[in-house]
Length: 528
Image (cartoon, rainbow, N blue to C red):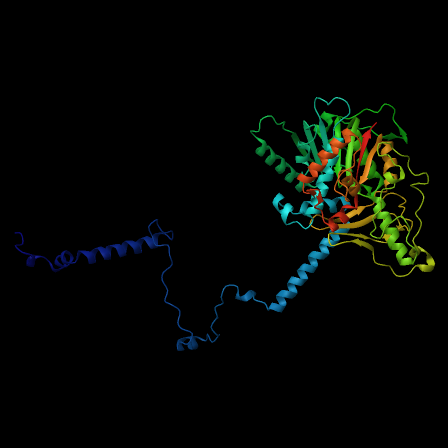
């Protein structure tokens, strides 16, 4: 007989029906206990985090003392607090680091070659825009004059003799940052190919960028010939230019120059109509090997009757200054070689009947093996403590000439004649532009060497003399030497007006800029 109500059920059954959740909890607890006894590996849904622990007791809790933990509480630090040093310690550490950097730089410069020093310097020269150069530069007058002198050489001597070639090729053996690209694009004959080489890799990258920018600006201009340009990182003194494939394709004679002291008859010519080297040739006069390497590259690249144009420091000016300063120290009377400001005309000046179109003979008494006349300080009875370098210049430029010359094993010559012709080192600093060691290029020594490589002189003038060709300081006019010469002078004068050298017949270059410009001269050789 079935029970009629829940009151008739056994007590245990009644309890389970009334508390189902409690039964499930007990069942789950039992299962969990059994599983933990079977294996130590938790299943996928088991709890992985460690069980919660009671928070640590306060440090002043008496129970800690009973446990024997009497160490002081650990103090928290702010981030970086442990690295704090006093200001005096920081300054001392900074000064020590700067001194170490200076020592490393001095060691690097001491061990570096002069070519490496020049490369590093020109790589680090800040590239500034044209607007800054024309408005804010301290040497803007000198910059304008230098650029006009280079443009003048290009306008006067880049045009080949006879009918113009079908393709005109130009090699720039010291192109730097590509500052002369625009000058060649305005040459009488626009080159079909301009090849620029320089030892400074960063300068070459900037030259490429300048050329690419010029292409973008000229794109779409009809009727204008586009000059193709290529750029290469190359030591043009210590390495043969035949290493560059483009130069080999244009044409290069690796055998140019003397062989066993004798000029080779019927020398093969290269393929370039003009070779340019602006403000760089003097770096080669560190040694005879570098000079001959440079001349071999020039002569090897030029076609017959091709032109070699360049500007560099004038050794006549350097000799005059050295003689002037040394004589002043010894109390001797000044000589006519140098004026009060140290300026001097080139040895073969027009006032002495020199014809720039007619190559003159080297000085009869010039002997590269003959030692220079020693200075009084080099004589035993006058040999005292080392003296400071000879120095001259103004607020824009400075020349510092050490008296002792390690490369030549001689002191500066009192007679101003630099023998042997290589290794006479000085330091030249020009505001915003140059701060490197340079070398004297004894003019007659250089000219004699150039003739060994089939290079004959056709023009040489100081920067001031080049300016006088188109502008007379007295009345602002220019000399007249025939109809053709007058037309050329008018064109060059108009160019000087456009480039900021002249304005309305007046000179726009300051006195100090002109003094700095007097340190240089320009010249042109042709390939026989």
